[in-house]
Length: 365
Image (cartoon, rainbow, N blue to C red; front, top):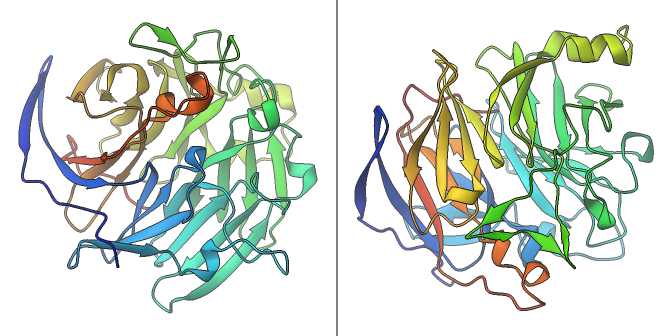
């Protein structure tokens, strides 16, 4: 088996206003890393970013042999026409406290129904598939990331609204009930899910397709340690919002009443991934500045705590309860062919960084 990952001993310091965080390049890989999940056993599982049409949608990293293998196996990473028990187009990936890894299949590469696939890493078998019916999606849906809320028994999905040439106007939240599989589409095209007209600018260049700025709706999403608050934000936008999950799930509320329950939590830069620690500090991947920023719970100020020239398009960010590190990927999305006159400028190595958060992180979100 090919060795894809190389552990690097590099350890650096970075001063960010009043914070000092040590971080390191944990690994280099030969394909773009999307989102990262850690199981309760400390296994690293991540999606290859679907933007680059990888052969293996999801892989598991073996720390002992420093190799990767398709996750959960090769069969699930092999498209076919006989059934839909395979992974087509995965970015969002989360694990829960029961050892189940949940993979959000956007299904845009093949004509199958979008779904959430749960694989039990304890029994090494399929746990369950939740299908996302047409009633829960729009024609321009792109279900990007999710929260696995085991307290309320729901998945809460962030739909960016940029699938099939969409411009973000159909961005929304999608709630899936873990018991029944029933789905609800909420807040489509409303003030907190829509992208703002704040283009992503990297090295002075706006991220655009055929001359039109790409504006991405609801993207980053996480929940606090008690599953009381849901935090979410459009990728293109200057605000993070939050709502009590009990309110979000209250189907007696009208759209207007639901909107009134949403708080503007803080300001932010354009960002992709979102995570949180036990003290309520929010960590976000700041695409334009090759950095991880933190919004401090004590005063909601924004500080850069990790910045590195190799952190190109920081994307997924997740906590590992076994070693206490926060892990973040560098996906190089902005270097893809669609943004660069059909020439793919992204190249290996792709990096995975890690750092110790300011407080104990919150896993299984």
